Image 1 (cartoon, rainbow, N blue to C red):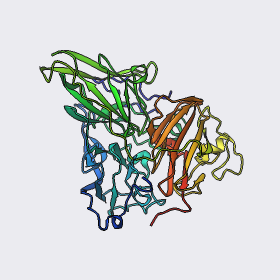
Image 2: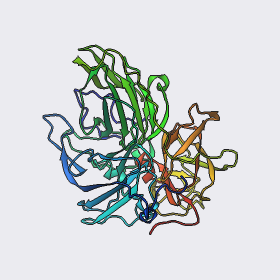
Image 3: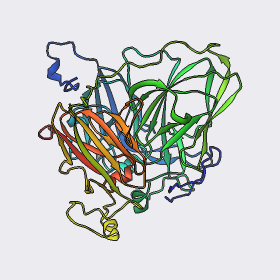
Image 4: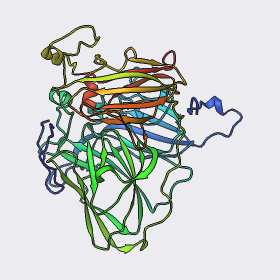
Length: 486
């Protein structure tokens, strides 16, 4: 793996490494005529240059791009069934958009430049408005030059509360990121370089939680915490082990799942993915337990310590149920589902001679790299966000996408506008048939997903390692007869 740091320590940063349902459930305003209007939650976001104290003293504050001066941006919190209205002001010197990752919004609100909206010009503004049909943990970020805009700090959490939430003592959000910092504490400007694009993306050397390097997280005996994990990193995959504790996974990508312990005791979180955990804190006063990231072999590092305070909430674990209420996705009909095959190619050690951007010729590896065609979906490397769809789906019909990763690298594959069930890996049925919107594919792995194509429009379908997306691993899936952009 092209990891930019040998080992991360919370006490000594390795700075300076620059290596590398039915249809809608999105009801329009007119659909509410004669009905009770849903509550409207209104927010404002301003994307602008700023500073954040990422590296500890004596390093100075880091120059970032931020929403409302914060990294991560302000938490947008609503309740299932609400209407959300977000007024976005662009104070950057370049265009931007906002994509509401994981939310099944109308196509015109999806925030994909040129495909679903005209980008927000420098000093321009745009208001997004949509209903939130599903509870869960989501996030927002730009889709315009995301490899740099996200990498400089433009992202934030979006939480949709259940109408009948489970009982917990604390509801906590951790937004993970990693940064490629120089010795002076500033962000390295080597965004979009060919080495990152052709390998495993921009992996940084400094990991933060909610924009800070955390040494400790205070907890109390007997308290139950709902811990919402969001991976906002460009490329880093996290594999978290909670020493001395038994976290229960209750949701993936915002969608409820039967509560269970993580496989091999490790919570895996690819870029853009979210995991909701419920943890009963049953240690004793004064005890410390380390949370470790063990995803990359021989590159494990201590993330932080759970530190028990002198007080206790209760002596015994809370006995109330932790299973979340299901959301509103339509269940696919597997017997009637139509199948489509999708192959992912490219990258170093992954067969880069796959054809040009139009897919109608062969190029040498060096020619391909010079042209920037490093990654392919079904033999085509994307240029920008507007392109002919790789597949066309009939609205309201069930589909199975049979996906094959022919590369030597992991890919978190994200479909806009829909959630899908992951039904098999390498021909073996998944245990939970989990709902997700971003599925992490291992090298050479085959994965089958299924969903009802019930949200019309042209939807992005791409790897969420942002350097891979920028270098071609992106396509359009069309639902219905044509795009619905207005």
